[in-house]
Amino acid sequence: MRHVDSFEIQPPTAPQPNGVPRSAWARAHRRVSRWHRPYIAALLLLDFGAAVLASWIAIARFEQARAGFQTSAWFHTVSYLLLPLGWLIVLWANGAYDRRYLGLGTDEFKRVTRAGVAVAASVSFVTFATNTDLSRLTVGTALLGAMLLILFARYLARFVLHTIRRRAGQAAQQVVLVGTLPEALEVYTAVSRSPAAGLIPVAIHLTDGYAAARGIETPIPVYAGRDILSLVREVGGDTIAVCGSASTEPGELRRLAWQLEGSGVDLIVAPQLTDIAGPRVHIRPIEGLPLLHVEEPTLSGPALLAKNLLDRLAAGFGLLLLVPLFVTIAVAIRLSDPGPVFFRQPRVGHEGRTFRVWKFRTMYVDAEQRLAGLVDQNETDGMLFKIKDDPRVFAAGRFLRASSLDELPQLINVLWGEMSLVGPRPLPADDGDFLGDVRRRLLVRPGITGLWQVSGRSDLSWDEAVRLDLYYVDNWSLAYDLSILWRTIGVVLARKGAY
Picture (cartoon, helix red, strand yellow):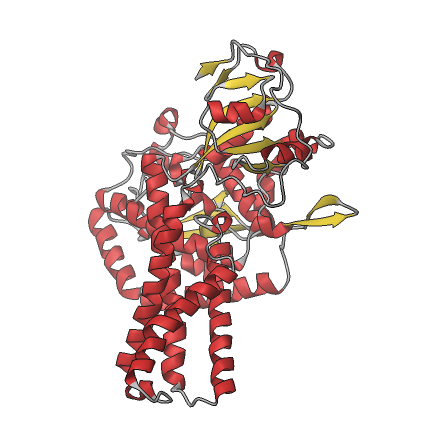
């Protein structure tokens, strides 16, 4: 931690920019942040290779693959060169190599999917225009296979990128935060929670003067009264993040954008609108004034109906498939400690309704009686009680907890409509009424897994867990649910935060 103990005011060394001086023929300065260049080069190779592999699979699978081609040379040229190059062009045209969408979020995958549709439409049009009788199965397999392989390759590339960012702190942008100290520290905390995002704060520039931060400990150096562009270069930054109210000063943000023209420094705006995801936020300009519209969260309608239907179908199908596993676990529990196989506890669910959750028993039958003697050893805060080495858990129970197999019987709750596959975790019903922000969790059905589970589980504080649950409630979607389910697989295999 650092103390703010000095600052320096320097007069501007050049006239204030007004957006005019640059010549229309002048070449824009190259981006200071360059992590995306080798990454895009790797994506180009991966995408081309995926398209070639898809063509090879289709050709090897169908004997009539060469239908419609006069010569073998032309057939191989189209299959292994022109079609893959066409994929790269269409991907580029759809913004799939735009650095703003790489490495985070779902926009990159959406753009690849749109490119797949565009390639299919283009091939269909060319085939129709030239009256070429191609093998439909071959073409369909090649196009669909290429799209799936490209999506998979990009997922692997993103995984490698995130690993590099988390472990080495490389392939990231060095950010200077501009705003008041509370606003800058809030943004610092948010981006530091997700190293995979590739934003590393390196300094804070205060807009409300040095006195507002005197003597306060900060994780990164704090400056005030400096020329922002000079400061960015001094600290080795490549990005400026304007935080909170600093982005609302009339004309200031526009002049800062002018000042950065041609410098190669990126500009990010972090408004005072936290924990609201992109799909709910829309910019609608009126007479040159960009208005940020925030839509209500979707807590009803066709999407919710589809979620409930998918939950019931997946739960029913899962229970049928898991019967042998359930029997094996039941035998292991009975051998570890005589008593019931299942543990049922009252929990608070949707709209405050109480239900009894199904779980495999992982503790000795006298666990409730022994709880009073362990309260002072609680390692969490809030409404939870957790001990990493809880003496009430028997050996088989530790394995069930670490592997999350003890949660599988909750598919019964999902089938009955008391829970969902994805949602906030149900909390015990004997902790009293849910007041304040916590009560908002009850607007949706609790889930077997959720954003809390894939972000750290028991390693998180109560406040952080509540924040993640509320974020899910306000921003859920079917695509977000699928993303959380996919992330759950990795978290369960890594046994992260499970005890």
